[in-house]
Each structure stands twice: as C-alpha cells, then as structure tokens.
Length: 110
Picture 1 (cartoon, one colour):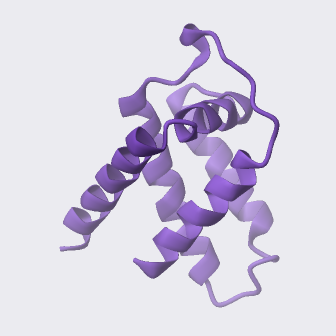
Picture 2 (picture 1 turned 30 degrees about the vertical axis):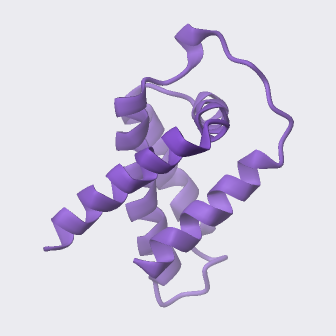
C-alpha cells in the first residue's frame, strides 16, 4: 500500500505543476469513470514498478498497457491528464476519490 500512496503523490505533483486549463464540462471524464481508470493505472504501475527488471526497462511496456486502459475506456491520455488536473484542484473531493480507490484495492487484496 505504501507504493500506491507514493504513486498518488508523484502523479499529483507531476500534473499539479503543469499549467492548468479549464475544461468544458463535456470534456471532463465523469468521476466514477475517472476513479475506475485511476484504479487500473495504479494496479498496472505498481506491477511494473515492482517487477524485478530495471523500472526504466519496463517503461515502454507500462506506457503501452496504460494506453490500452485508455483505449478500453474510450479516453485519450491528454483527456485523462486534463481531467486528473481538474479533479486535483478540489483537494477534498480529490482525496475522497483516492480514498475510494484505496478501499477498492484493499477489498480486492482481502
């Protein structure tokens, strides 16, 4: 679980540092769908970062797998990143989203 927390922190800081843009409401990924995508990305990133090979060697495979998640969900990486940034602006709500992801992952781990 420590790796998941670290992932969220890194992911947040990566996108929080970018210049923000206001998205039209129809371009923001729905919150429930966003939570599903974020959950899948966390699982995939945790897997590849814990793989025995050098993490840099797994970067291409990680990126390809994450792109498959986006394709499956019908979103682009850019739309995901902009939606992530949009949700992260409201920290209390964003924290609730992260807590929901943690609850789901803990439930799956049991």
